[in-house]
Image (tube, rainbow, N blue to C red; front, side):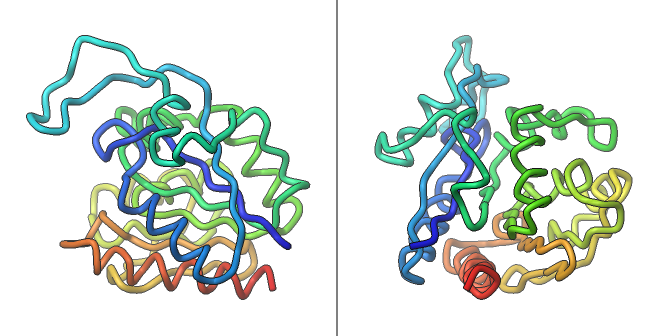
Length: 217
């Protein structure tokens, strides 16, 4: 049976992977009869945010250790992800994408991507295997795919401008819809860049996973 790899960026919307998006990804893959395996980089988080107060905490946490909370411990170091073993890839959003997998949150169009992540994504792309980017994760598309690859983060003008400056073609999109670059096999949806509740986030993610399933069928 074909498997999909999921890359988490920690645990928690403000400093890691967005938990709702991560769980919805696993749920919708399972409901489509698709197996998955979870990965995260074994690195220190950029910082730690108290999700109750929004304040930065004077402590350090590990991205892989934190992501293991979402995966119920069934997760591997990103270094062990081999594109040959999987049919597709999904990257849920959350500020961890822009703080731990890249520095997009701080440098925008001047940002860089974690080398191991970039190399893995490009291997999937070279093998013409689809990649789904959720929420803020489409900010990575310009770093990984050919210039002009279609992407969406919804309709935030400043973020869209940064995505465009990185080389992607930003397309505005409703929270319940998806944007697909058929040539690059890249799928994106706004999720919590626009979602007002978990149902809205789920609608777009479900469509994204449905299209992913079609592309690997």
